[in-house]
Length: 290
Length: 187
Image (cartoon, rainbow over all chains, first blue to last red; front, side, top):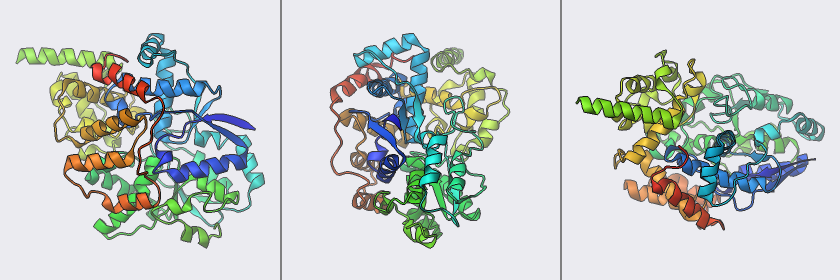
């Protein structure tokens, strides 16, 4: 049985609540224990690191110190939080003077958690995958999936050592292992624009539309992701795209934890399948997953 | 005129010191601009920004749209054959623009960051509804994204009441000691 400190982040308590729900329920099935970091604060993405470096480091220094109190490796489901926490840990552990400055800002000694890991990494270890295969009650057989990694899970390679930054395969392998068809498609790591969807709708729309078009043209029936911002941009904005362009993609965008949960036989409530803008259930019904 | 150039060069030196990234290593291959998903919307492409910094055109870079349109996707930093952390430099440029006060009032990205940080400072975590309402009021587009805001509430994907962490005093202190004191920490 593996055990980790767990940092949900703001999105998993709001717009990505189905990611949190499916993560928690899946972890029980897989025998992975997640201990919530007590009283965690927002990691500051995507505003703190572009306005003040000390602010970015202190916010994440506080979280890392709280996590260190648990004494376990820290696992982070959100790609943005993961990047901020992992980068801050690296900067602070490599520079003792900086680390002292940040401790002074916090008004307390700084402790750094042993390692920061992404949830995708933790849920695709050999041990977990082995358990997945043995516990599988359903299969993704017949489902064509576009595995979408986005930016921060794989870039830059120095900070994120999860996978190849240009052609990552961990999500694809997971889909294949569960019996699904992971489509070859060229936009695995294209950027969805992140928070630009709130501040520059015209530019953001171009990016989202390109990704959805490519997924559709590649024959995907759904997109699978490991990032709350990618998920909400691709899922939520389809409705607005349909209104402005007349093209209705009807492309469900699922979290990898939801697909894993389905294969293990978890129900739609336990996986939050009702929380999406593009309802994935009709598509999942066709392949006998719900 | 000569004076301006000299002070801008000093500014670039300061930028290099703060970010640990040296734009002089760039040899203008253009890979960053080719891979940048937002170069189509920028006034200067990432490789143009590198060249402008090499020749000391800092003020023009600091008032550009480019630095705020960068989505921090890190494609440029990943692909640079000279190992220039272009995205890291974009962060440093935004920090510098912010500190020098050379950010336009109508800059929507900066307004978003301001509202985001206000929310974080008040609650310790993000209060999405408050942030959306502040943003809409600030931009004068009161009904913006109403078509997704209502379903978000119904699907319980945003909460009516703000989250509140116990360590709010410490969070406020972090702001006072970093951003609000002119950002001397972390350099």
